[in-house]
Image (cartoon, rainbow, N blue to C red; front, side, top):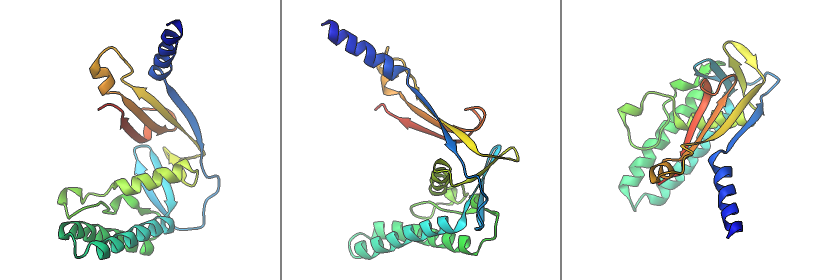
Length: 195
């Protein structure tokens, strides 16, 4: 019985107060390729346009294959894929023709049928790709106009109380990528673990 009590006590303490913080080392050289710009608050991130264009073309190719496969089976799904494929193709063409410093937030990339409310840029697809560039250290990042070579990334368990069902159901993790303060973050994600 004592062992069981000790196990639960340790499990609660280790999970209730978990937090991780690690450093991301960024690129130290300036690539010769054309770079696109992504600005969030005090941060400006530059990533290679050709790499993002290639990712969009690969996604577009997958969508074309899906259209061919579902062509005779589900017209609603085909219309969903066609609209998405068209937007990905337009964005890839824009990137292939873009000059250095192109504003990536001007691209309209989202999945699904045409929706005027989503034609505002700042796509989730691009945000995820840029986050991957940053995490792998393949991005050039400026903070308040000054180039930086490291970022911090933190993972913090939120709503750590285990006193009520609401606490357990509303728990999750906040993941932030930042330079100086977690509140001034370049990327912020929340993963909900409850029901």
